Amino acid sequence: GAVVSQHPSRVICKSGTSVKIECRSLDFQATTMFWYRQFPKQSLMLMATSNEGSKATYEQGVEKDKFLINHASLTLSTLTVTSAHPEDSSFYICSARDLGHSTDTQYFGPGTRLTVL
Amino acid sequence: GENVEQHPSTLSVQEGDSAVIKCTYSDSASNYFPWYKQELGKRPQLIIDIRSNVGEKKDQRIAVTLNKTAKHFSLHITETQPEDSAVYFCAATPGGYQKVTFGIGTKLQVIP
Image (tube, rainbow over the protein chains, first blue to last red):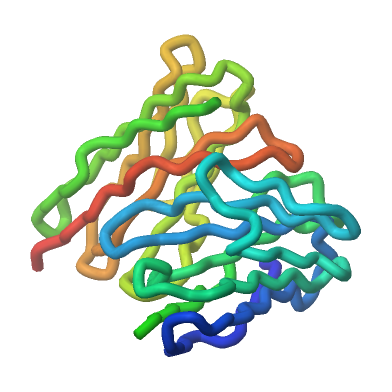
C-alpha cells in the first residue's frame, strides 16, 4: 500500500515557540492531505484539509492562525503550531489519498507526539 | 455534517470468541465505510472497508456488514487472537476528497 511519513516522530518544545511537522507521501502523489489531532484514548479529530497549491480548509473551532498549513507540492504538507502552549500537547497525524487510484482509502502517517512544556 | 456513533467503547472477549463492533452514521450521502485498527502510539491501519453498493465483505477472519437503509455498519472478528487487541475505529465519508468522519473508537481486549 501507499506510504506516508511524518517528521519528527516526537518533539518537545517550550511554551511560546513554534513547531513544524512534515507529512510526506513517499510513493504516490496526494493533492489532498488531512491533519488530525488525537488526545489520549480519544478518536481522531480532523483539524484541516490541506490542498496542494491552495489554502487549507479548517474545521470549525480550529484556529487557522495558530495551526498554519502549507501544501507546497503533491508530496509534502506541513503543519506549523505557532506560539505553542501546553494544551497543544497532543498526537498529530496526517493522512493522504492516492491520486493514482480511484479508491477513497486514506493512508496515515505514523504521527508526531508534541509535548509543550 | 456527518455524525458517526460507535459502540461499545470497550470490549473484552476470550481468545477464540467473536467480537462485534457496531456503528451508525447520519449522512445519507456517505458511501464509503473504512475500518481502522490502531495499536498504542501507532498510526491507524486500514483493515477492511465497504462501499454502499455492497452489503457484506469478508477478508479471512474479518467481515463488515452494511445496512444502508438503517445507516448501520458493523465489524465482525471471528476466532479472535491476542494480537487483535487494539483500538478499532469505524468511519464514514461521501468519498472523493471529502473528509472522513471517525467514530469514537472501541478498545478490544482479547484475553488469552
